[in-house]
Image (cartoon, rainbow, N blue to C red; front, side, top):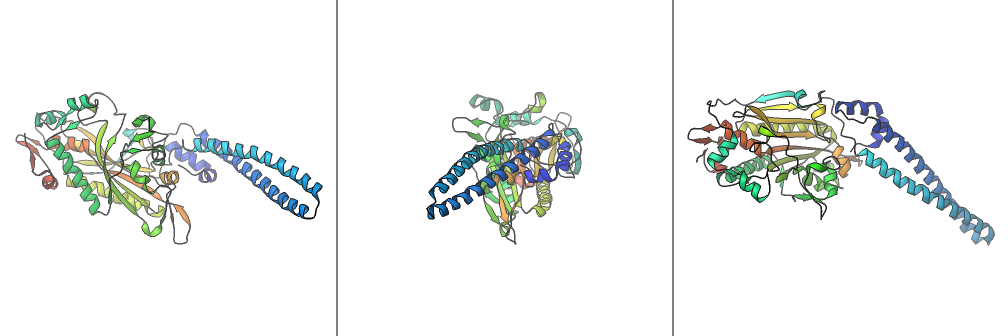
Length: 424
């Protein structure tokens, strides 16, 4: 959430940066500044009235001590009138504060100056590439056919148990999932990330803290009886570990990682885009999160991008890194890099990771702060990235490594999977 003081002091800049994200209601900025001015006037008036009440109360005590009861009673009437007026202003103040906050949370984060102009994914900028493109025979199969041929995932039974988009992994498919998760977690913890295993449901305050509410209600599964939400990513519960806390500067940076299933109601488009593992409602993902001082956050972002890139190099997958344009960024992000791997049989790029710096946007919502060396309390910056999301990683591994005698796995997975090749 943006700070109203910053908006007030940087009106034109805020409007200009919001335009990069194609925010549809720039007039909200002016409305917020007007409401903030009214709010500050009301606060000043209530403070003046409270000062008058305090002064009169003191005077009443002095008059009573002198036996001047009639004068004291007159002052009491003044106090009663002031209190009545102050109650009205206090009520108006509370209503205005609530209205301002309700409007403030509709503003997305401001994009970093390096964010490219653009409206859609077609305008994203390729910042890097790596890996070797596989050469497959003309009869190469897409992963949904390989899954059936090698009996790795049962989509039909998953649909029977729950519904479409809930795959049932079994046998070697389940083992491959476990191998990838363990490899990702080991890689992350060796890099200094502390592992967490968080709850898979969160309350409204937690979902609000990371920006899922009020922006993404329709994308989350809602347990209405208890007011809980199934998590769309481990970012949501893990970042909230430090909600409403003041950290010591010496504790920073905080580095966290977690594996969780993830749940998304909106599985996306139709046709080939949702075949097999391309888009599902439940999937596994390992996440990395950092909390750091503001002046270090873009160094941390670069570190996290390099971290994810190295993972893809270990997996021997062709990849590219995209710097997202303003129109394709999330509500909460200041700068995002997406990683895509090439799926040879489908002949298309598949997104497998987003690495983002949220600057102080999430920290302001969650009131995560730290005390600097001078003892001043400041908001820190939060960052997160997929490390990695499994469905499309699995799709690319299967398609790119298919051979006549099985599916060859990258060497880094041999010890985790227990074999170098997936065989029928």
